[in-house]
Length: 486
View 1 (cartoon, rainbow, N blue to C red):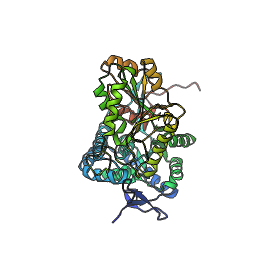
View 2 (cartoon, rainbow, N blue to C red):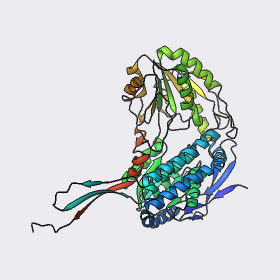
View 3 (cartoon, rainbow, N blue to C red):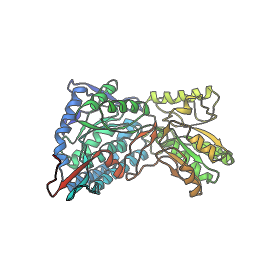
View 4 (tube, one colour):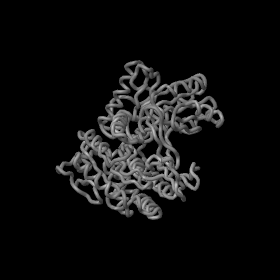
């Protein structure tokens, strides 16, 4: 029997107003995995109204109670690991290891948000008037609209709600059409079981053809006071425009064109291990994936030989097989898109060192190219698949220039045995994140996460996440009557 989920509004599972549903497809088999209710603008309005009605009560909830809900949710999520592994395999093609990491980091993000509930916020200000006290206080903004992608569904679903809820906001979540269960309804189930009050979190899934209309309707709702979007740069630009039109702040975490730099003083074996992981985890479908591997000329031959051999040996196949490293992309269309990028590069003169060819349904082989030039689409565009381009550089200046030759600026990895050397290079690369002696893929719930340029703006994580979804008020308190000139 195919599973089905209704919309989650005001603490209840309710059908879409017009009764429509939409399919949720298993990327590996191509068959139907589930169906979900397909919301329209009327359902969005219902969800926002429920969140708005719940806001005063949740904002007034004691810090201890808010913290306890988030901590219970973390424990409940960890207890569901086996369920999440099966869910992510069937809905998004995620491998078991990737799903387990999603559960772990999702739970840790909830715990970090719980800690933030009682973290000190605000300041006592010097006041001009005698006997007056000035305060700068942080307060929740109201209803937050959250948009969640499919690629790290539990991590990003939790991230979309944890800090806003910790700050005292309520949330309306629009999950990806390609993983609405894992990045939306699962999160709601966990928080509902943890004791989150009805209406504090609402989930509205939609059909793919309605995505733009539903998103615009959600942002336009007057009660929505902030926008929280993780996804592609292309869609993020549109979300940012809609938010700006309605004078609503937005946090945008968008795509990347990330570089892994192998400096002349790197350990080649470690660099190979790091690059294989950073490029091919989750079949390259991570905003932090290393699209580009830049290697010092002195190490190029040794690195390339070992790297290509490792990549060629990566196990491909079903996400249900615990040995699989390269599972399916999220859809057959996505695999064809990646194959087209490789074909375009080859037609322009790039060389395939391993992989390439046509995909098998949603499976695309792990692919390494060299000779990618600015005329090729892969040079600028985010691969978001199991593909990387190798290039060499003669010195640090050239490495920095190559790394910065992109409109994106999310993360970079710098492999070196000299931490000081690595830090000096990192300071010259225009990204929101840099990892010295490591690859590009890393996330910790207490750290400021986000990019610059076409990778977006704003920061998730730790106190920065709470600040993103709260506002500062100036309050004065006088202990005597003021004197006025008239």
